[in-house]
Amino acid sequence: MEKKIMLTPLELKVMDILWKLERAYIKDILAHWPEASKPAYNTVSTIVRILQDKKKYIGHMEKGRSHQYYPLVSKESYQQDFLENAVEKVFSGSVQSLLSALIEQENMTDAELEELKKLLDR
Image 1 (cartoon, rainbow, N blue to C red):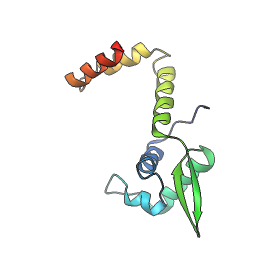
Image 2: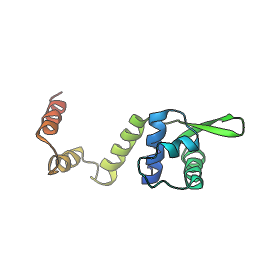
Image 3: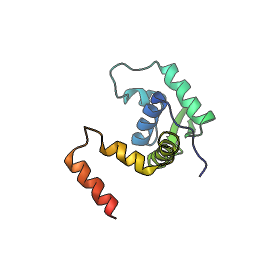
């Protein structure tokens, strides 16, 4: 799979909604917006067009004069690309540096550390 362009925070919110709903119109995306303060309809429509036409993250089906959108990239695939990008660009290609940074986070619980140990043991 070709490397995908990383998403902006606003694009990621739209994708999170599409990943949950699987298919949605712009009005559905706005109805499921995670914050009380929602962007304008035209703003979301523009983001959706960018995700579809330029970044190739979503597709659409025509339903009358409307478009119903759906993800072309799975959340898991995006997460994998994101991590690979982070390791390469932020941690100079070192997975060990990434793990060290995660472990040194003060907000990591004992249960999370234990789960990470189990993953590393595999």
